[in-house]
Length: 466
Image (cartoon, rainbow, N blue to C red; front, side, top):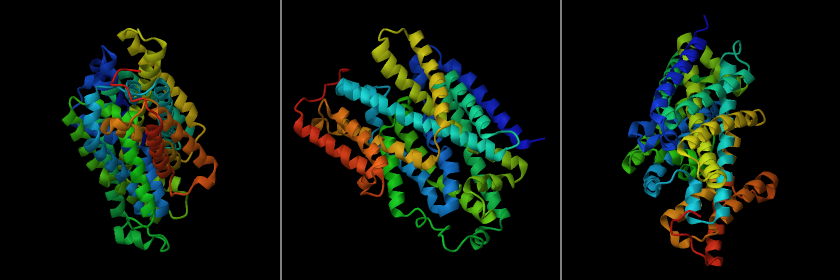
């Protein structure tokens, strides 16, 4: 009897049961489907943002990096938490008061049409790249921990069926309610496995004694370094201010205070969990010092009691599922709301609009699965893609807090600058005069926005759609 496989199957069954329950609540109209009827409570907002943030990169990715550099890898997830807190304190109220569904809808309301189109394109690309990484992480988890059952390809296909299935069935309600299970499972599984693993290894002192002395494995700063940690924080605060999947969670709250509380509590919950994952990676290094980081963590987990190993496997996969569902739904919302309804069929009925949105979930899910077959390097790819959100954060912050500096063309030129900077960073090493592309993105996008203010005299619209 393969206990870990049975536990994962039970977990998948529970997810689909939750999704079919959520289907009744999401029926009727697109608002129920993509925003849960704007009725999400504080606990559901909390688990939704934790579920989105604490995914494959925040667990598997952090543990693998900790295998190489030590506990400081845990700052990646802490940076996510700080970003969520910033979102709750700074802009959750403003977004809610606008009564929008997507970021491009905000651009269309205040800026010109080409700015809105650029925003739609970039937001979808960013989210599809992140979504594709979830298939890679999900397939890798299943393949590495149960190689006798899954190959990387079948692991990715299984992940795709679950991601697409539960999202298309119940929309935001499905993603939020399933995150009650996902977040509980991932925190219990990861923390319990770490405690048991450290105990079996003879305690922290014993682990430290078996680690190479030339790398600061037990230091909270030296491995990644202060510059690297600050770069993560800047990137992820930026992301939380303007990424569609994050904004969509806040817009699903039943009121402003619910959105703010949910993000702040969720952010606080994230602060320590990255270091727990990092400790798993350090423990793996002490137990299996001469294997690749990708193999060390699975070998460590499978050395545990079979039931605990199965729970931990399900927990790591739950982290991936919770991230993927929110990303897939928000990408489909961008297509249906900002492309189909805006440009293809503005008079679409509510019933057909819901069908289009569900169809977009399925088609985008298949597209991202195909893309996932061609990319690798989870955290590096993620950091580069997320850096493009600097352009959106500049636009959003000026629009919400300093509209007098905004011009009709500001959004388009700022987003265009963000894309150009990202391309140059990847192709022209001479432009890498700062430690991370996020700093260059902020400087260039901020400069472009202010330059447009000086050169363009046409103010933004008063709030009508462009």
